[in-house]
Length: 152
Image (cartoon, rainbow, N blue to C red):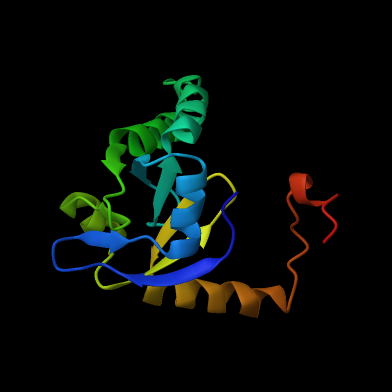
């Protein structure tokens, strides 16, 4: 569904213009109702079509409240979840609290991640990528079991 990367800007009112390639996907899916929430691991935001979010939310609801990591994940993902819409010009209003906690100011990276978009502060994204790519030169040997069979 969503793949690729776009660089976009947030205007002075906190509106983010979704790039045409991603906006076209929303239009094809007839999905202008969206959920915006905080990524609990990277200080970026997740932007889901509402139908995808409902699927994710049902999985989140099954996490235990007795496990601290699960509870924190629920609190972040569900607590920051905000309904939003694409306006007629393909813009999404990002609430001030979400802009603040994810450090989104002017230049934003939209990153397609199959079922959602990730919204990153552009400088943070570039720094993270540089770190990841530098680390890729010297594999640590600690490959997650779920990645061992992945053939690219």
